[in-house]
Each structure stands twice: as C-alpha cells, then as structure tokens.
Image 1 (cartoon, rainbow, N blue to C red):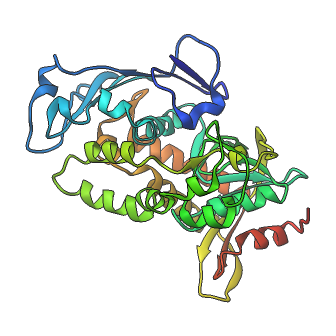
Image 2 (cartoon, one colour; image 1 turned 90 degrees about the horizontal axis):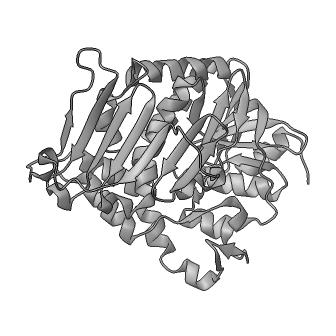
Length: 373
C-alpha cells in the first residue's frame, strides 16, 4: 500500500502508487480520508452485464442518506473500465478494476483529484487550478490560464530565474490569502519541451536522461494530452461511446509526458507555503502586443472558476457530479462554498491579465516585481 499525507489536511491510502502525490508519500497511517483499492466486479450482477450505453448505478441522494454507493460501468461490462465509490459522510472508498489501475494517471486525474477538490472544500480549503510561485523575497503569486496557453513554460522559466516553486497545476488555498504547495509532476507540451526542457542534462523518472530518446514520441504524446486531445475526449463524451475505457487504454499506450520540477531543474527550490499578493491570468495576443491590465475581483472570479471547471469537468466526473454528497452537502453546494472562498481570496489580492503576442509572460512578471537574478 502507498500512503500520502497532504499537509495533514487529507490522507490518501492507495493500492497503486500515484505519481501526482509522490511529494506527500509518508509512512503508514490509520483513518484515511480516501482509500483506493483494485478489485474485480465479476461477481456483481450490476457490473457484469453488457450494455448499450454508459451506466451509473446509485441510490445517492435518496431519503437524505449520507452513506451510499456509486457504481460506474460501460458497454463491455467487466472487460471495460469500471469503478465504485462508497461515500460514508466524509470518508471515501474508491474501487477500480484492473483495467483502470493500468493507467495511474487516469486513476488520479479522473477519479482521485475531483474528489480531493470536494474534500478540500469540506475542510475549509480550495484546490484551485493555478500555478503558484514566490519571489526570493517572499512575494507569492498565482498564474492561471487555459490549457496550452504557456503556463508551464512560464513557471519553468521563472524557477530558472530563482523563483520558489509551489505548484504548476493545482494550488491549495487557505483563507485569507495563503497558498500551500501541491507540487505534482507537470504535463509537458511539445512547445514547453522545446523552449524550456530541451538541452537539460539530468535524471528523468529515475533513469539517465537521453535527450534524443526523450524527443522521440514527444509530439504525439503532447498531442494526445494537450487541449486538442482533451477537446476530442470531451466531444466523444457527448456520444454513446465507452469513453472511460477509451481514455484508459489510450493513456496506457501513450503515457503522459510528465516531469517533476526537479527532473528539469535540479536546483529548483520548493516552498511549502506563501502569502499571496497577486493573481496573473495569462492570455495570448497578437504579435507585438504586451499589455498588463488590472481587473476587478468579480472578473477574476469568473476567469478562475472557468479555468478550474475546465480542468475538472472531464468524463466521468461530469456524469458523477449530480450524485456526489459529502457531509450532507451536494456537489453543487460544495462548489458554491468553493466559489465564495475564492471570492474572499480575490478580494484580498491584486488581479491582472497579462497579454502577450510572443509568450513573454516571464519577462512581464519579472518586470512587475522589479526582479533580476
């Protein structure tokens, strides 16, 4: 078993190793908030049937229950992707079949992380889709952007300039304006690889780095795990296809191009927490345009929530959301609580849109903080 203690806020016990949570791996503990187990559903009559469409089987939200099961199965029965979630007030047991377990990335991103989002809200925190860094003199800030805009490249370049790293994709927020690190591995696009990773000589995933070998397949891996790939999967999710099975098999065959920040920059400094002063939304613009615009907290809230929803609203989460209830609150109640917490955060900090036609957001951030390393 693998044990992950996320800042003493949420504890996860898992039968498979979850690369995204490796920073929080710890010794054995009792009373986890989430338990992940690999199992067979071959004796469950609900799960063995062949079907003409995806199926959720649940008694959730009936008679005010706080303990219930959610089962998910697809067209091929036990030959396809299947899982079950048991919710008992605020404790979650996730059971996945062997097929899903073969893609640890899918297991984490499509099952574990969306549930983490709700548990953080229950405990008074927000798991916000954003990068987080701090200047060497302790000024913390967020970066937020839609997929494939250039956020990861900007993060890597800032860290190379001496900024402290807290997260690239998700940040834990504690009110009124504290960012807490969530340093999971980064998904590297072909553009990021070319502009920020290439020519590094370090160890990647425990093996000696071979630049020419790692280049092979990077373009197709980036395409599958890019905004284009995600958009295709979203479109397929609207069709009557076994979307979770397709996603699992696809990502088993074409693994995500993931790297930890210290795989890329050996001397990268990871900071546990920081006080946030600013939030920067990155936007692409026409060539030659470089513009910094201060925006209202209301505008920032709409943008932040939209970017978070884009990260989380992925099948089968979009099917599950109406059936989730934790501590007597529905998923929609929890999302409203999350929105109110983000609103309070944004009222305490400055929010900007950085528009650049040449992806020069790093230079704009350095200039904003009057920083030179």
